[in-house]
Amino acid sequence: MTDYSLQQKMEEAIIQLERAFIRLADDRDIDVVVEGGVLTVTFEEGEPGKFIISPNSSARQLWVSARMSSYKFDWSDQFSTFVLAQTGEPIRDVMTRLAREQLGDDNISL
Image (cartoon, rainbow, N blue to C red; front, top):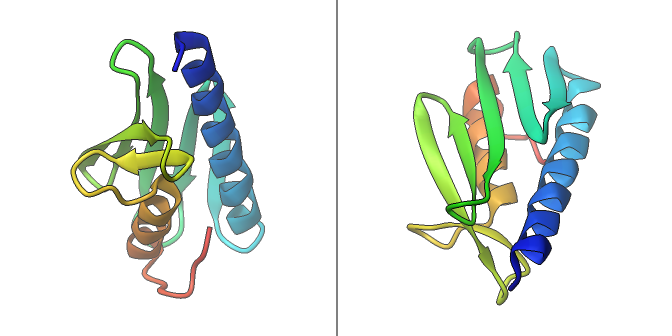
């Protein structure tokens, strides 16, 4: 995959996550901001904290900082999404799990 195509995939993934968190923000006390291609989700409800989702073009990955940990996602042609490098778990599943933990609500779905 070309660098340009990968960059587009990164931008699309961030836009999709932004939309999912904005829908969640309709019911929860969270702020969602994209600035310079970096998505920041600030939680006022549940445990205070931030999720930061950013592209790392040189590593060809999406990086997530959340809940005092960092996660690196590689593009998967097989699944047509970014997946956690260590486990192959899709980024949306990981972000849903992290949001559930952050808000203490197992019913959240992104």
